[in-house]
Image (tube, rainbow, N blue to C red; front, side, top):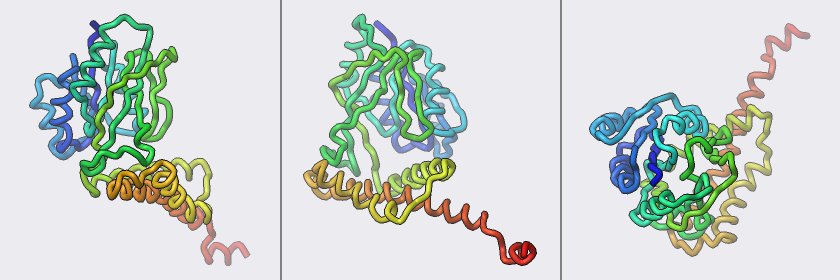
Length: 267
């Protein structure tokens, strides 16, 4: 049977990590925790776990961080699990069964059940969520310079698991806004560096159209109050990326504009 390293990237995950560790122990032969500067007690918790191996480095973006961590796994197969995700007993069993069989597959897509403030979200587009998280160590590379980089399998031989990974997206609004600030600032920096401009139509339409797509076209209304909030926040997130870009555009324009004294001297 192939042995498995579970890789957990984390930073300041004291509220999530202990429960995550208990879940991954159902399937892990090695638990490798890649920390990027925790200051909330996470490191003390890790040091008390004799079955965990800790590696540390500065975080640039998700793909870069995981590409650094994956080669340090001791086993041929790697399962990447975020601290707010849970490996259920059924998923652990399916993984064990797949790895016990001889196969030419080098990676597996895993469906994901998402929860918002403890409520299962079955629509809004979240119903089709899946992630490529189980793969051979030497076949996987993350591509993309954002926090949503996706792994690619060099051989292209990819299969699908049937059992879902449980994802507790946000426990409260404070955690949502922390991620919102990080993601929107990072995306705006990328767009601004590439020369993109936030137009009036971008600011006017991005949020409402994203909300309409999630709430109406993807049936978010069927999730009740939780679905309404998820769709509204999805639209707000889309708007805020453009608003942050506009903020950077304005700042750049101000720095490029000559001061009045410079204009007088030029005249």
